[in-house]
Image 1: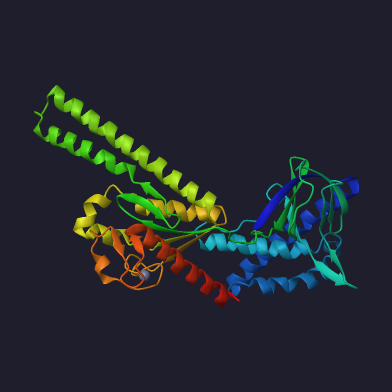
Image 2: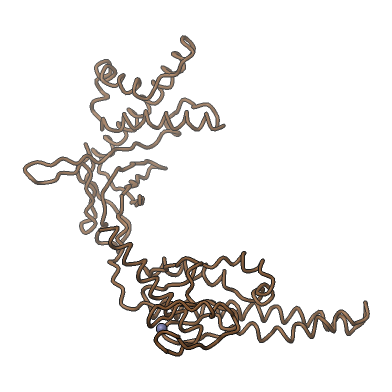
Length: 380
Ligand SMILES: [Zn+2]
């Protein structure tokens, strides 16, 4: 990730002279190459490539020795600047223009890293504690900014020195590494997602779908509305009541989803669910009606982004895995349990009695752990 840090720069008189010289040299190269490209195009109908232009620099520095006095790295960057201007032109912006002093008031220099006898040398260095920046040709320059920052962890890529209304600034581009903490899972949970109970966990918890409690009232009100006379005061009142109820349902949904996801993420490092095809469930007419009030899709969406934020893992197992039918104790597959009406059953093999949903969530947990371990092995 690249990040720019902008500091106010306080060059002394000699340094100011050098900065102004390098800006002038960069502007000269920019205008020279623009002119050269235009002339070449007129003559041959072809534009010069950046690399052809780079080749001009040595002969130009021979012809105009004062180009050598400033920071030479800035000369190459001004050719890249011109290339950007041409790219802009090809994307519909105006044709590159010759730049005067006001329009060309900065230069960019890159950090060059050399290793000598095992020690690393950078052409650009930032010393936040002493408020100094080291720049090519300028050496140490005083800076100000980021008072509370003692260190920046990262690699300096480049610095752009700018002169604006008599003041100087430097923008330092730093590649910062995103350091993710090591993932060590302690608590793992499997959750079965349902309609009556939204979440059933392998820790034997059920979280009720509170929204379904509003269903009866909503239906009653909608029936009454259908019967009420058009234009009547009663009808208006009913409409208002329905609106308020919808508002309540929306709020309940939101609180429910955030409540569940926060709890799951706080207590667990790996959360395992089924990969539900909510769209498909809607098409199944029987479940569709009850699902309309079930925020399962939204629950998974929120769970996903919160896991990413908090460095937790969400594992989704195959939706066709028969989590309800398998005995979580001995692994026997009992096809009779396919019938959704069966809430409790006894395993014919090991005689464990099962609550349909807890058993399913335990199987989801085991299947998820299997997937997680498989992933670890493949990574290794
Ligand atoms: Zn069994």
